[in-house]
Length: 157
Image (cartoon, rainbow, N blue to C red; front, side, top):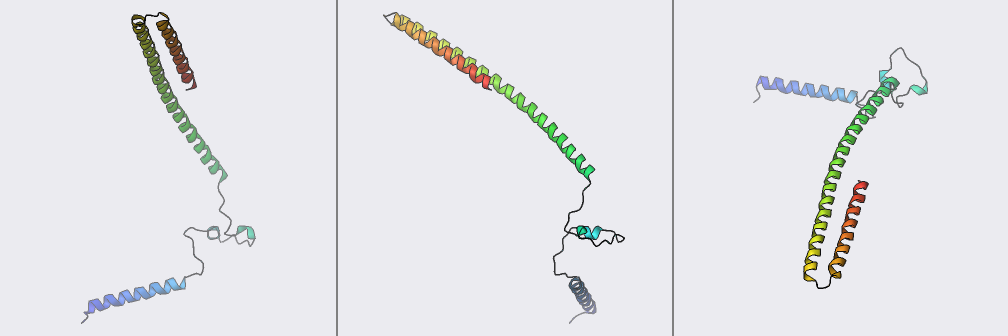
């Protein structure tokens, strides 16, 4: 039924399994262990002080010089990144302001052209000369208001 090689393999697996179960049971502790080494394990064997300040609940000490160097490097990187972002922001803002100025000037010129066209049409068609003058004055004031409002908004950014 079983060959000798398969019996040997089964015996080896059973022995390994029993050995594994024995070692895990022997080293089982009621408290869960951390994957990280605690400070009590890192203490040297010659340091056998029994004071309460050296317990494993206290975090490990950090090197203040290394920590200061780390934070200085972080500040330097943040400053470089901030400068780069400010540079890009200023370029984008200048580009948007130029685009807005172009559109504002186009609106003003188009409004002035349509006002002149309307004035001419009314001058030809209207028997009363005050109608085209009133239209021309209103459209000129509207164009000046549009120009002033465009410049104000452009100054806001």
